[in-house]
Length: 126
Image 1 (cartoon, helix red, strand yellow):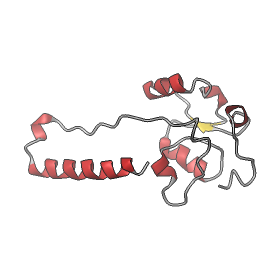
Image 2 (image 1 turned 180 degrees about the vertical axis):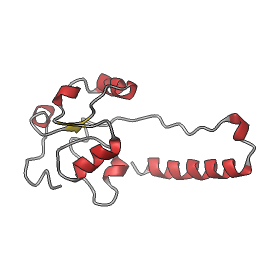
Image 3 (image 1 turned 60 degrees about the horizontal axis):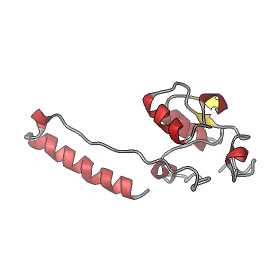
Image 4 (image 1 turned 90 degrees about the vertical axis):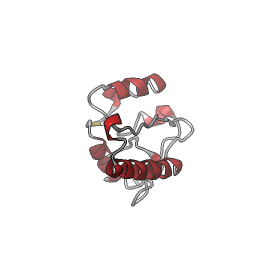
């Protein structure tokens, strides 16, 4: 909100590219997948770069620029304003796994079931 109080919210990709953008530095396999959907968002467009998702989120919250994060994270605590939701909608597969040797451990199964239930609640909030 503090960034948008000083800059008009972009309504198109061309307008977005004129803003201070917070994003990644290194191209990881995840970033390569994301670039297939949004090739215009390459590393060189980001004014502020870090590979830490936590740092990116904190930079966005601090008003350093516009960036991307999960909707659920954006709505946590002091909500961020969602921009261009029709353009940016990137869905990720989520896997919760456990080594097969641990599946008979009551403690591991209890934690696994708790995580699975809460993760489903978290995902459904998006």
